[in-house]
Structure formats: structure tokens, C-alpha cells
Image (cartoon, rainbow, N blue to C red; front, top):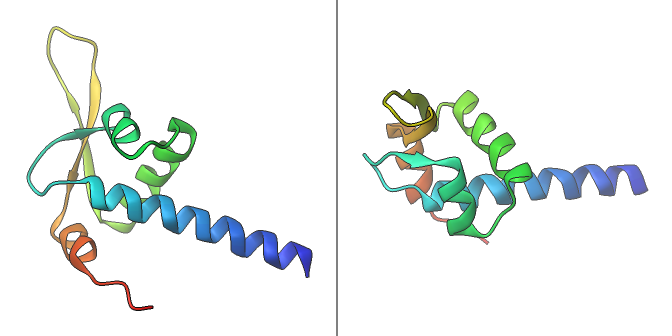
Length: 91
């Protein structure tokens, strides 16, 4: 019983992080993990795994910025992510 409760709590926390991240995205704009973590007040240890989950699901895509500065990975909301972002949560 306790193990099931812990699994449910972990799944809830993952879903909550994914939802918060999706809500922070603006369609058509590049976002960076560090900026997203600051915007939603979440530690990077939860942000980057959540970004990876969202990318595997197809909600976001990522790429690398090339230039004279150190390389940074950016994330962009996809059409599927826009649909997920605009869905209403039914209580």
C-alpha cells in the first residue's frame, strides 16, 4: 500500500512538472532550460528530466544554438504541445 502511494505521488509530481513547463512555453519562441526553471521556480533536477519526457512525447523539440558563445540547447513548443497547452483541466 505504501509503495503504491509513493508511485502515485511520484507520477503526480512528474505530471505537475510537465504541466508547469508546458504552461511556461510561448508558441514559436526558443526557450532555454535555465530560463524555464527560473520562470516557474523549479530546480533543474526536475526541469531537465521533464523536458526530456516532453520531447519524447513530441510536445517540444530541441536544438543547439551555434555561435561564439558556449553552446546552449533551446526548446520549442510543437503543434502537439500547443494543443496540450490549451487543454482545459477537468476537475
